[in-house]
Image 1 (cartoon, rainbow, N blue to C red):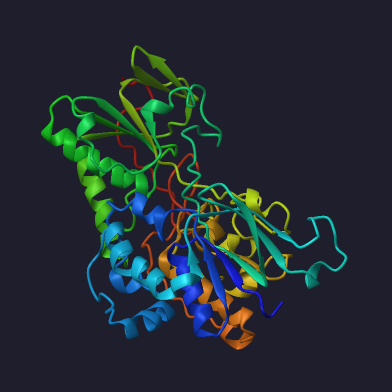
Image 2: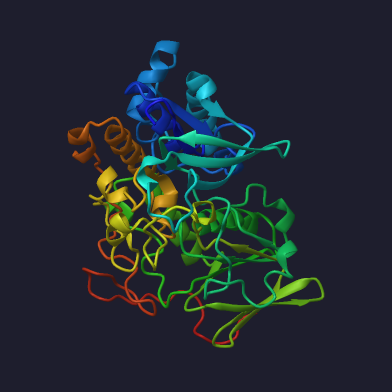
Length: 432
């Protein structure tokens, strides 16, 4: 199989970086991208400003590949995602040339002549990557190894608190958005609900709060599943990513000012349509009524259907790669120290198969670009036979400033902090 390429699924930040590392080590790489161009998913959230700075958003091997073309690495500032795409990802894809093929959807990964059940001769067979191009034509590519860097962008979580769409959620899809908004002018004078507690939800709340300040009659209600908002605003001054800290600080300010109403312990069970508006109903019967639009920003989950005929090892709780799950589990911690990032931890029972990037984190929300760059550096070293480099950990992550992680589902605090209760917004009575 030495004459076959390493196939990389997804031409996002980690997929392109993987190709750069493999190319630098003399291995043939082929990147298959579903979208029209590299970084298609990044383009879809291009209006969002990153809280990682430029030096944390470019990979070392990618820089070494780009610099001979005259490209210069940005050294400061916090780009919007569209700038990241235009000034780094697209030039990197151009530098990789015909190693990147856009408009190619991967529909499955298997071993040649072997389904998931068959043991005999399995290890000796190449991977078969099944594809469909933009015209609908089916094909296949043989590969010596497969790196799945396809991310989680295509599969957002629902508003329903039990992991399935709430009652009425599918029927009300025209009034629900699962992405961070850009232009929110259409919501002036309406009641908008944001469901979720992560950075995406915080971004949405801040954008909507600006509209609420300028347009009388605009209401913003922020629904949190947890019984406390203690960890929603981040680590403040202790956060080593200043823009991430600023995001939480600004969110706290708009809540404290009364522009945004926060309701805690609200687990969505039903979305009920009523004359063009929605009522959002919690499991405990509380109701937020007269809602014109809902932003369900409750995270993402990986689509593992393309891997159903290969042998993968995923954590039963997170859908993350089992080897790294214990270090990224939000039920345990959200600290900045993550040691398990290498090829050994990312390996599966299927030799030569690796899941990297946001998809390797499954449903965990704490992924940073830096983590993915370290993952693909190690995986590329492993595939090149440089096991010393593959085992070496070169990752240094900025701390969040939040020592405790998610803590109790119904309360505050975390794994290494005394429990804290912070009730913001009305007590648990009907609101509307």
